[in-house]
Every structure is written in structure tokens, then in C-alpha cells.
Image 1 (cartoon, rainbow, N blue to C red):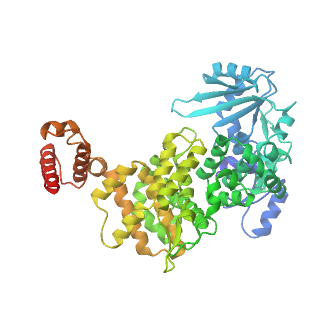
Image 2: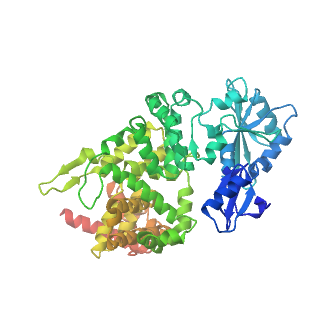
Image 3: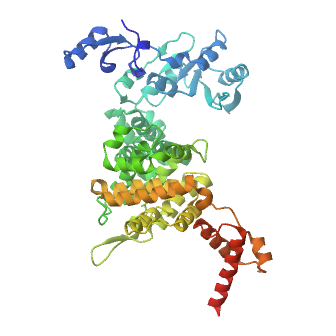
Length: 558
């Protein structure tokens, strides 16, 4: 019998089962070698098969950190790894945050282990016996270890009181055995999301949103009974704190298939409790070139945004690019900026939330005020005048309600307020009016680093507007504008985006004998714009320009 060590990486959801492989690819699985072999032979009757057994425990259960915790445990101290760490380990996903359950004395145990692991100790909730350790590694990465006393009289009670069966599996650090009273591992293999109990959703309604998030993230199907319990518990979301709702929705927006997750939340009746402004978008018709109503268009923007971030991601997939003409052009024009885009999106305005999630939140709200601004001209053309600025105010109010930080609020507001600017430059580009250096300077002057997010959003917005009817010349024009903006921002920032200061306010006051006032700021800004256009390169030229500018203003006042 072959061993898994000699095979390509295989998902650990098959742990404890036999799998059949054809040329290294899994084609069937079963509880016994014979069932796996027969299942594979039924669909691959002539190809050579290899049938192997997957070990019960993935490599994570022998990780150095977990072994270190186990080595420092008192011999009589029960300790169980529980929750998402076990689930992700069984799925073969990376695990950094470890949750542990103990019968009692979690605070005391965590404090003891902190000293031995050289970890920072944080008592999270003394009343509920909960503590956290943070282990910082030499490379700057960190692992979070949470310890909590049983929520119930024993471990099984604790597991049964959790949200979903796939999160109700424990690993005994002493015996190295899985404890799975609700069949969570089988649900993982079947890609099924099932509540631990009928009361699991009503006891904590935020689990409704979490269910949708985990189903999207892990490719799961929600069991019918669980789905019905979710619908029945929806009204309880009105009692959930804004912070908990925020964390779940932003995780959805940062994860895979955000458009599908939003559709699922809509079908469950969650949106009025979570993002109430979105309800009004349904059925709002738009003129050509839009091919969908505002709600369907908004979800399409999410889908296209996820797709273009994938195509422009660090891991280049040539097959995906070649499968779509528009993606091929996207890579051709912008593919050289993969590294810079990855670094940009890796930044965080808050340690617990990503820029990606804010970008998708802005995409959700970019047209939110179209229903309120919709007008129909005599020709039948539908217009939404000033919807970008009004939508920016609405997303700001939602950001405040979600308790985002000031920096995060400004980010989403800026994206929405400026989401039409790239389109306008693209229209001019098609009329053989390429975006000027001055326009590029003004774009980033007004938006700063958020300009990169606006460009990404604009590309997704354009794809969603036309869908399959997008003309190549319109797409190329948008890409050319995007490339010019990227080039300026990353390749020549000192020449165009933020040219060095040739003069300051004091220089103008002293050299030109001016008095303080608005005129000083206007003149300095005009000098910077001319620097961006390469008209001014040194202090002497700037002073000469300033004198001419002032004389011109005096002449116009006469």
C-alpha cells in the first residue's frame, strides 16, 4: 500500500478514509479499501488506480506549537483543541489561531503556559474563564491561542452548544484522538453545513450570517432544516450588536463569492437587519448600456471585482486569462503591477479588517442612491444625477453604524464619491483625448492611495455595466486610463503624483511681498499642477511663474 507522503497534497477532509487516485487525482473515496476501489472502477473502468488510506490526523496536529503546548501541560490537565482550528486542519487549510477548551481553570492554565511559551497573556473575561496568549515569532508572524472553560458540565455539552457540527469537533492533546459527537467530520466530507441543534440559531442569531460566510468560504451546502431554522431566527438579528454584525459582513466581503453570499442573505431576509439601504435597489431599471437593474448590477460588480483581483493576484493563472478576452487584455495592460497591487491590498487600516473588505463594501454602496436620484427624460433616457455624491454620504452613515474607524469611513466614502472619475477619463480617451499629467495629479491629490481602489472598482463596474456586450474599444480605453494612473502612482510618483515642493507659503510671502490669504494656497496648488506637467522644474522657474500668475490675476481684476 502506498503512503500519502509519496503523493501530491491531498485535502485532509478525507482523513480516516480510503481514496482512489488516477494519475494523482482523487476520483473516489470510501470507508473501506474495497468501497473506494469499486466506486472508482465504476467511473474509471480501464485506467490504472491507486488506492491509499489517509491518516486520521493532519500534520497540524503535530505542529511545533501544538507539541510545545502539549509538552508543557501538567500530566493531569485535560486540554482539547476545538472549533475552527480543528475544522481547518481537517480541510488542510493553514491554522494560526488555536482555540482550547478545558474543564475549568482556563485563566490559570493560560498564565502558566504564557511563561513557558514566552507569550503575552491577556485575561479576556475572568467571569467566563477566558484568556488569550499571543506568540510572536522571530519573523514577525504571530499565533493566537485562546483558552476557555467548558460551556457546560463536560466536553460533549460544550461541543453540542456550538454553532455548527463542523465547528464542534475536538482534538484531545493527551490521547491524540478526535472527539466528534455530532458527526462534524462526516459533514465536512459531504460539504454540508448543519446546525448543532434547532436552538443554535435562535440562541445567537449572528450565526445566521456566519453560516452564509462559512458556506461561501468552504463551498458548503446548508442543510434544509438548518436553513429553515436560520429563517425563523432572522428577527433576532435586531438584538445583535453592530460590532458583531460588522465583523461577519466584512469577513463575507473579504472572502470568496461575496455576490453569492449576498444573494443568500437576501433570500434569508437578512439584509433589512444588516445593510438596510440595499433593499431599495431591487427592480430599479437603468438605461443602456446597463443590462441589469441596480441590484443585479451591484452584485455583478462584486463578482467582477473578485474576478479581476484573482486575475491580477500574485499567483498568475494564464489559463484563466486566456479563457476570457477581456481578462487577457487586463493582464496585458496591467499585469506588471501584480506585486504592487498585492502590497496595496495587504495594508490594513485596522488590524482585524482588510482593505479588500472595505473595497467590496464600497462596491455594494456605490449606486445606493440611484433609486432616490432616478429621473426619466422625455426621450426615455434614465438618469441618476449626483448619485455618486449622495451615495458617498449614505455609505458614510452605514460605516458609522457599523462602528468603522475614521480612516475606514473615509476610505469607503472616497471610493464611492469618486467612482465615476475613471469612466469620465475613459470617455475622453476614446475621443483621442488621453488623460493628462495634470488630470492624473488632480486624481491622486483628491483620492490619495484610495485612488488605486477606485481604479479597481471602476474596472469591475464597467464589466458589470455591459456584461458580455462590452465593446473591446471601450474596455481598452478604460484599461489605458488605469495603466496611466498606475504608471504615475508606482513608476513616477515624484514627477506626477506628489512632485517635490519648489516653494512654500513663506517663500511667496517674502519673495513676492504678499499678505496671507486664500490666494497663497491657490498659487501653490497651481505651481504643483504645472510641476506635474513638467512645465516647472526648479525654484527660479516657480518664482517666475508665480510673478506671472499674480500679474495675470491683477490684470483680470482691472
